[in-house]
Length: 561
Image (cartoon, rainbow, N blue to C red; front, side):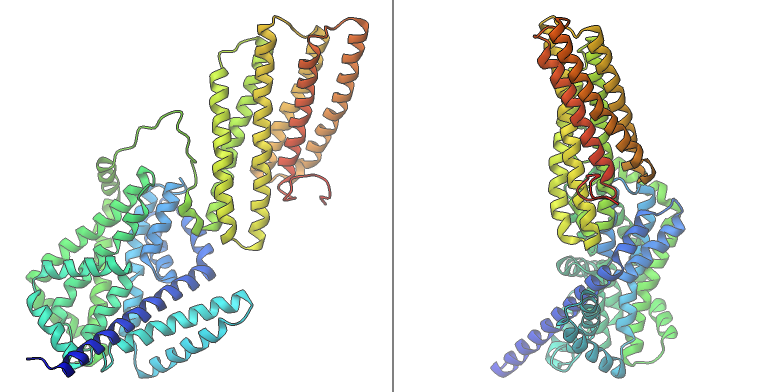
């Protein structure tokens, strides 16, 4: 019968063990956050510029994951980029494969620890916490990195201490547990569940390596748990794909399938040839010391991911086709509006999010341009068949304006000061484009109302309005070129056109009153003429704001150097 003292010792050891696991995971999160803040934007831009070369994709995926220390974070980034249309499935698949290789770095670091290294890490943990009290952001990030690295090894040492895994009671308990669940498939399930719960295969691998080093877990059983951990890490990506588009769900499915196939292959190999494999690992790292035992597990983790990548890399196209067959494209309703290039997953990638926001604004600009053209055509030809198209485009403009404004408000909390200026300019551009869209709809409504009343402008009035409309269309093209291509050279041309339209408004208004005075124009037409001229002048003002937004966040040419 177990005594109360032994029970209390066991409970105490379990608490120490949980504390060690907790500190280890906190350290992983600190390290990942710090690395992402210091190098994340560069990594994300690199991800966004990936080519169709599958080998470079694997290299980039491995490099990014090794730097930010999280294959799950890389997978979520890739899902966000695919969902935003930055990356294709063919480009994303090799990156996911590479991410699995990059995540093995943590296991190697864990296995290499020794007493001198531990002392250095303890100092890092303390120094990092102290650096967190500085006001300078760069020092804080460096402190987060140091403390994260230190806490990882503080947690590992707590787990391997006499109070935790080093305690005979804990050792006996776990040995008893693994004596019951020594069946490979059960061990794989343990790896899946444990990794899914802590949302990190690196952390799960670190715990398993520590257990092997302390003698709590035999290496032949540990290998199966490592295999299960590689499936469990897919849970984060699967959750990230919920609510995303079909391609993003396919990325998550490919990630899951890749690890399942690799696990099946290695499960069969390890199950059938466990002794030769363990002997091979022992020959690579001879000795029974802690580091040698831990390096064997870490080496197996590296071999598993590298081999699986090499085996499946030639079948990228087949994996993509398989994912497309399993997850079909949704049928979309024409009247159902969605943002085409961004979603909230990009909030963690500010540089990519800003790039995609510009694409979304460009799309909105195209809708506005189309509506201006259609409304002018309706005024000329008295053809109102495109009224429904104008209404649909206007609804799309309104939706994009609202949804993108909400997205930018959320994004503004995650960006640096230089990017805040860009976001500020985008707010103004959205407002200006939305107002131009309203004017375009007004022009169409003026044409419809005049037609219903069977009234028209005089020939001279039509000629004057046509000239002003031509100038506005010219401004629209110039403004769009400036915004799309950051073409500062054309800003002076935009201002020149805007000044000409201001003068035209004065001239057209004066001519109109002269015609009214001479009886050459009907009073009934007067409100429509005045509204059209005023609307065209206002459109010109908004187009100037859009063009000048590339050099001035408030979008005005005033006070701009």
